[in-house]
Length: 382
Image (cartoon, rainbow, N blue to C red):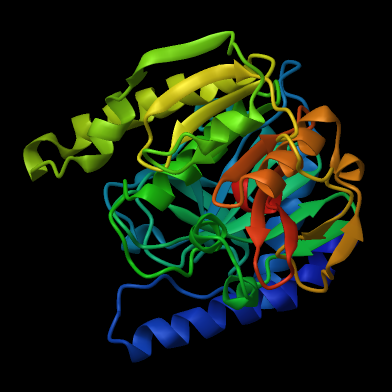
């Protein structure tokens, strides 16, 4: 095959191009001139097509894990440039994948000067400019189109998720809906600039880490200095933490100077992973809004005198998505049902639930709807 042959690539390319063109134009109007070049729809289609077919290859029995960035070697800081560029070909991508599978390393893609402008892989890059289009292979047949948000923490904004013949384009307008939780706004990438470790972004990191361990889990976020959450928990708690584990809380309040910022970030990430790992234990982990860990392995029970939650509204922040009313058990198993009940009874709390299959749901009380709102956000966490 010499031309793109993956129908989903052709279908999604115009929408992806429109996203990057719009945001690049807005960035330049704001005086931000260091944004990456915007690929046209044909280029986007070719990169997605090559990434998809490469994801189905095997190199010595390993699944290729690659990240393709559309960026010129001339606009890269400290690029690793190949003497002979590689063709943007599934076989070539699969062969080089073992060298670039670690996080933060991208294969640079750009039109070759000496090959009629055909796209080629010129080398590798670690630091990419804002609004640089990245196509990442997350799993066989599962691709994520994203871009760098431009902050120093290296955060990305997901634009589209493509799995086989399913296309999910992230809906930027979802952040303006009534009762949109700050966590969802941050995941969408359209919140106002904030510190890397502000309270919302710590929740984002916890969500990503919860999903990454692959065992499924629940995390309940309850108000500081509140005891009412205990009315919805079976006592005694198997793994209550006394005194509360406060390392993450302390780190989140620090403002390190430039000389120790990297070490501080690494400490935050290690602590986030330690806390998120506790969600793999049967039951729920419980943290305060200030990130003090109170317990894990906690069993959720309906609060005395409270009605059983029968219905929640479920939305997913993707273009064309519509709200659906359903029983929380339809979202998953016991974890989802108990998390929905907890938020129904403790309306100032939020529950994060990861499924073993990778689905991720944020439960929050919606005053506008007068019921629990389930936000499906796995498309934003890949």
